[in-house]
Structures are given as structure tokens and as C-alpha cells.
Length: 346
Image: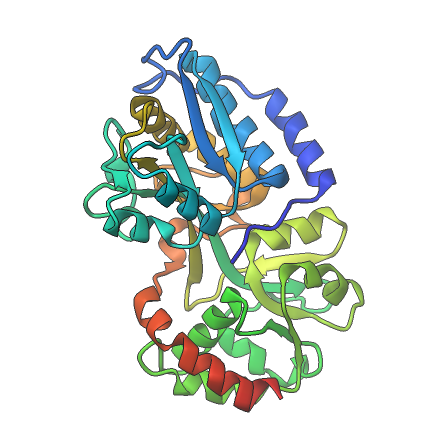
């Protein structure tokens, strides 16, 4: 699941809002003096990277005297770069969105986090038990719906089978990671799960005549035409659609919101590992997490983050996230794709 660019309108408004923010309170990171020190991190590119720079790295630099730079690259490319520079990393810190942190840990490419004062506050499942990585934000999946067509927010993945929505549903192909998660959550909603996917396929067969799409870039046209009312996707894309003027809402299903973790790691042997650790600590601060929620509607990973009411209504709380068994899913994914192509796609 790649990270899509935010709209220009959203980005510009985000920068305007950030320009008026006070400096984050002093603490473990701010107490350190990194004047003249550099920090190089991978970033996700586009205006997503720019918003993260403004919300996190620029305030961190102002407080500590560091100079932070993000190098744009998607997660797979970032892992490849980390591997190629093993033993002599030129990038101190990496951000991932596809589970690459586990591979990096297994291959000995990263080092345990130190001096991250808020690490223990992060729930199990959003941090490595050995302290090698931490999720500093979460892209939460759920149900996107047109508020002018569906007056009461959907409550469950079971709602996709409601007869009144027939002909007005779209869902992602299984080649899209969100499509796999939709299949799993349908299975859970009807008594199955990762270890029993049959209820998911049975439910999906009942809507296989609906619109199937490939990527997030299809969402504006699908919702914009007015015929599609309900789609399983994520809170970040719901926000992008809202900023473009479409009457789209986001609902957290009662089965929970599957999550894409946005993680941070420190490269083994990084020249500025201490600066990287302090920056990760900054990422976990409630003040920084609130700004990420505000600008992109990513869920805060730190349970101590108390969102304003307007934001809390638009993203799931960390306690509402559904933990999926990604290892079990990956073991069966090829088999599921073959079956999906045979039974659903045609």
C-alpha cells in the first residue's frame, strides 16, 4: 500500500496552520543540544513528506539546533537502500509503511531505539518488543461513504451486504493491500478470519457484481459521479476527498479498523543515531501527533494524545484498531489471489 499525495489545497492550508503553531514543549529531546548536527531520514515524497517536515522535523530542529533532511523514497526502495549501505549507512533514520521494519530487524540492519522516553507508552503491536522500531502514526482503514446518500454512518463491514446499497458499492481489487484487508474483515464480520477466509469469500460473492477498482486515485471519480455511495478504504483518503469538496465521511466499523503502521527505525551504525533517536521521541509527542492527525487524518499511536473533539470524530482511537495477523495473511495471499481471480474478478 503506497502513500498517496495529499491535495494541493490541503497542503497549502496545512502549512498555513502550522505556521502559527507554538514550539513544542521542552523535554528529553529539546533538552539536548544538537547545534550544527545533521539528521538524514528517508521520507515518503510529495507533499506528505513536506507536511511531516513542517509538523515534526522543523520544530525538532528549532528546539535542538539540528538540521533535518528527508530523502524521498517509498518503503521498498528505502529498505533496498538500507541493505545496500549496510555497515556504512548514509541515512540515519528510515520511515516505513509496509512492514519493512521487521525485515530490517531480522537482517540486522537497524539498532535498538535508545533515549525514546515515550516508547513504553505505545501499545504492544505498535512497537517492537525488543525496541528496534516504533509506529509513530497509523493509517486507519474503515468505511468511506457519501453523507448525502447514507444519512446514518455505516457501523459494520456487514453493511456492504445491505440491499439498499446494491448498485452503489465499490471495493478495491485484491492486488491492492486494502482489498486483502477488506476480504479479511468481511471474514471476521461473518464469523471467520485470517485462519478461516471462507466467510469472507462467501460475503464477497454477494457483491462481486459491484464496481471493483485498483487504486486510491480512482476514488475521486467513483465518489464524484454520485452513483457510488460506500467504499472500504482509509481515513487519510477520506480527508482528501473532503478537502476536494465531496460529501464523504469516514466510519470506524465495530469489527475495528485495520491499520497500516507508519514506523521509524535507526540504521545500524548511523553516524547521527543520537539525533535520530531524539527525533523519533519528538514524533511520539502528543503535540506532534495532533498535527499529523490534523493535516492528514492519520491516527495517533500514542494513547496519551488527546485529540480535539472535531478530530476525534474523524479518526479511530488507537484502541479501536484491529490487529491483523499479517504473517498468516502473507502465507495465504497467493492462494487467495488465485481464488479471487477465479471467483470474484471475472
